[in-house]
Length: 199
Image (tube, rainbow, N blue to C red; front, side, top):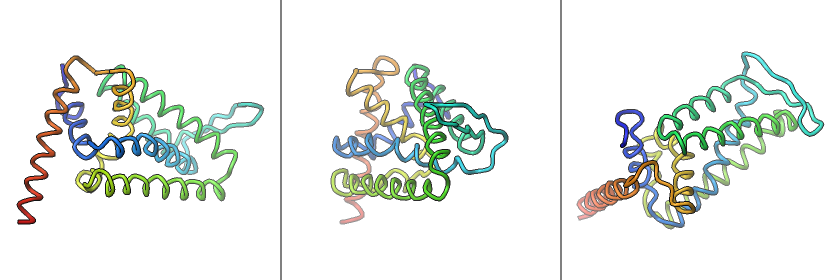
């Protein structure tokens, strides 16, 4: 059964899904959302750390900084796990892979090159998503209505979309039917409100 409150996956997924119902826009988000998370961690690698861990990887020294980037990774991972233990565990693993990978890349590039890589990647990824909303979804992004929820749910949403599309995964039986009904109702309400404003 579904959970309530902060870990109400149906509510979160329906909110995000109402802004991402077009298949092309969903595909665009699948491509660009996780790179945004990765490059954010790449830049956050350079925030002050509580302590560092050094080890060798492929013959190179890697410094793992337990800092804001690690804290963000931990928050996302724990939140995803409690939303859905199975898909959330995979999402948490992907979050920590991003943290390790971004730490490795940041320690190799240094700050002066890292921020340039982050800037280009963020511009490309955000531009792609805004174009997806404008050209295909024909609706403003979710972050304009609920910034925190959109940022936190985006990586998990695209992962669940991929798991459902390619493997038929559901957190529990009937989940997608319930969520789709909520998404359809929300989209209908949005269109009616939009029509009233125009007329």
